[in-house]
Length: 351
Image: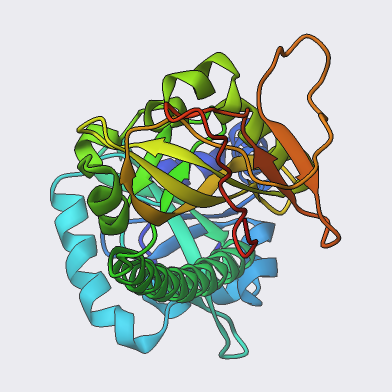
């Protein structure tokens, strides 16, 4: 404790000098604190300091006591702090850690470090003293900076990924638009897509021209809607999908039915579309009209065929195997009204 005559002797300090017990108790309280502790008066003069203050700032107690608290902060903060100190003492109030602005401490060696300070006013006879707790938050600030840097890097990566995704999405949209224009520009072929259940999910302009159904009318329809009744009895549409799912591709020549009821001969290729995991995603179907519309029932080509339908399916279409590994379907024989048997050639075949 300073014995300088110009050093203010508050009643608390006088009592502190006179009472050994009070001196011991007060010192024990200051020394037990984990943070640097100071007691200052309204002029900012340091009256008491604990050992943690010595460790944190590098000054001995004798060097600190009697000095203003601004000695422990960088010069750029001192003018503003003097003003803030006057405002605080005009209306003393508890200020917890972190409630004030960002502050920095100044060590004896001239190094700076970030601090948090709590203020607790103590009313005494003739005035107010303030207990100040000072905590070094250098480690926390470094962690916050690292976290902020990590967040900035993450934001940058997310931005890059988002930009790349937007570009990929735009390229995909353009690709889909080109594909749509390409498909819709095909008029000789009906190109439509069936989902795994065999229902129409896409329908091009060629399909609309050949079948007479608009895309809205065809959407959700099963493949059987475009086959004649005898094919439905023989379960031909479902069989074609089963064969495409089993072998990857199925070719057939048979009769198809337009919206107005007219029949026409068509060559059709049905393929199975699978994703990277092998899951069935649908069936692209490519029927092509071979000839003029007619009203008769389908006739069989001259190829000798072998019935490969599973037992119990009844007398339906038969499948002819070709050397290229693909299959073509042959429909049941049909005798026209003239009584003379006719044949319908397979695609590329001759009667």
